[in-house]
Image (cartoon, rainbow, N blue to C red; front, side, top):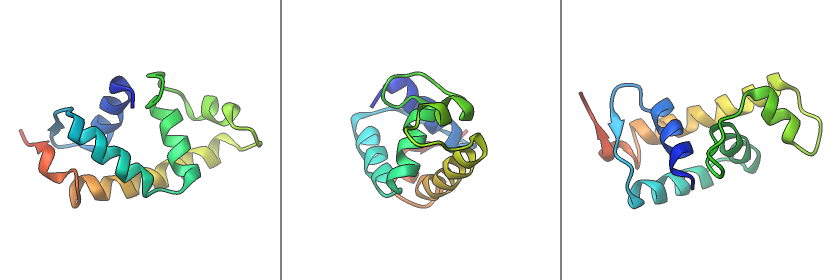
Length: 101
């Protein structure tokens, strides 16, 4: 996972704290992403640049997909996936890594 993209995603998920990037955090984030649907995971990877470090708009993500998908549908799917990821950040496996303050 690209560190810049991972930092961007974690900053988005953790509103009231920071997560220090470690191999363990990266591994857990990968496992949490595996809990999403294939489409949610792929769209979040593209949106936040988890593979290549390139942050993309919803429109840019929609244009990269093999089948036609609207920008609005991409946004809906990304937001649904992010809600599921936020649960893991606040309540689940990533909670212990959040540094408050």
